Each structure stands twice: as structure tokens, then as C-alpha cells.
Amino acid sequence: MNTVVITVATIRYPEAGKKMGAIIDSTGKRWGVWPDKLPGYQQNRSYEVAYKASDFKGTTYYTIETATPVGNGGAPGLILPRPPIPESRPVSNEDNQRRMDIFVSVLINNSKFDPASVPEQEVVDVINKFKNIWKRVYGPQAQETKPAGALDRDLNDSVPF
Image (cartoon, one colour):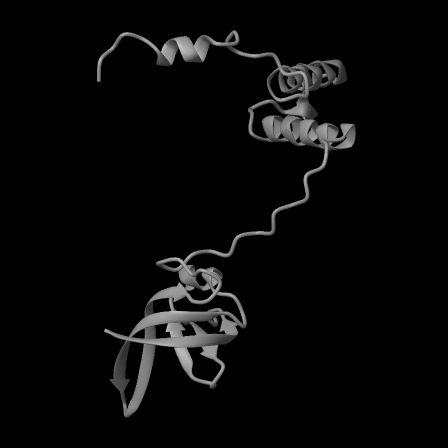
């Protein structure tokens, strides 16, 4: 297997009916890449790639087998880019309300409960029940499911390893 360092100029996802996407490097050379690996590449970033070459009807095709980012402390193997770390900020009441609304919506959508076929008061009761569950389990003042220190006692038992 051959290796070379390339800088990504363009990332191309597979066209309709095609199995492979491509990376076009800064020299204009095309490198075949399997679609599940494409999100791991970043434009204008350099990678040391291991590739295989194959000839078909007089044309040489290059397929990337593995890629390691170079520069900025590249790690072995192709890694997905990390999203930027958001600035730390306190969770607002609006954030908690949105999270609770999403929780309730998901539970209703994924349950056999059909809000359109029951009386309005029953829908209100179910929603309030789900909101109370969210507050108890995930809310800002969520109740602990085990008393403080219980996990430590479980881990510090007398079972030898």
C-alpha cells in the first residue's frame, strides 16, 4: 500500500447511482473515498493517506484506505472533526422549558396514546404527567434516584477481584 500527504481542496459526495465519493486534492488529483468516511475530512486540511491504485481501461484510479490528519497534532486513523466547544453559560428557564417540551412531544409521538381520539381533559392530564416526570428526572431540581453515597457503598463492597 502506498502513502502520500494530500491537502483537501474539495469534498464530493457520491452522485446518484454511484458508490463512492471523492476528495479532490490541492493539485487537482481525484481520490476515491467511501461515503461513510467523507464526513471525517475537512477542506484545506492535510492528511497522510494510505491508498491503493487500480487501472481500468487505461486510467489509474486511486482509492483512499486510511487517512491520518497531519499538522496540529494529528492522531492515528481517520477521525471525525470535533464540533467547537460551546461557551459555558447557565441553563435558562427557556432552555429547560424547551427541553421539557421536546421530552413530552417525543413521549406522546412514540406512545400508543392518540390525543385526537380522547377527551381534551385526558390529553391535559397525560401532558401534565409527562411534565412532572421530566421535572422529577431531568429538571433543574431533579430528585436523586439513590441517596448520596449509595453508589460509593455499592462500589466499595467486599467482593475481591
